[in-house]
Amino acid sequence: MKKILGKGRFLKLVLDGKWEFVERVNATGVVAVTALTSDRRIVLTEQFRPAVGRPVIDLPAGLAGDIQGQENEALGVSALRELIEETGYHATRLTHVADCPSSPGMTSEVVSMFVARNVRKKGDGGGVDGEAIIVHVPLLRGIDGWLQKQVELGKLIDGKVFSGLYIAKKRREPADGSGSKTNGKKSGRIVRENLLRRRS
Image 1: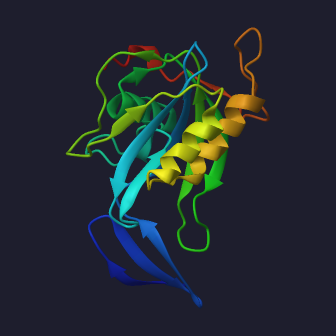
Image 2: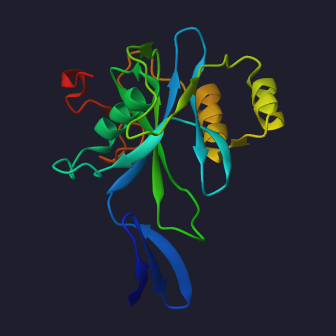
């Protein structure tokens, strides 16, 4: 049986048997987007993270269900919202590719990974509520050298970036853009939940 050891505004510390871990209290999910442009660039973010005391290079990512009145927001819609808020890039559709635990020894958090192709710049990005996000759009060709340069500058690279690069290099949409369905599961399915109706 779970026991709550402590609770803050955004997180709670839980004891389950002998295992302590953290759960979010204000979200229903976490999303991350591998956003690719038509000229073979990947959209990345940079943000100072107090927990590690350094800037971190990451995929556009964020929470689902954390906005009052939108607690039941679909993961695909959350992913599109985070993409435009953080980077200013817009996608007309996404493909869900995986659900990945972020740090299963420490938290129950599972990140839903999406890929968006042919994204277009529609705004400035930068995040909300003082997030001060910097947007980078490096070419996929030469990305290893670009990332190494960021490390030399004292930045950390989030592991989701390497997952996103794998997705970018290995996964291709079907020629007809239809996506695939497996017994009704969302993995590999094109997200079409009225996404075109959303305007940034």
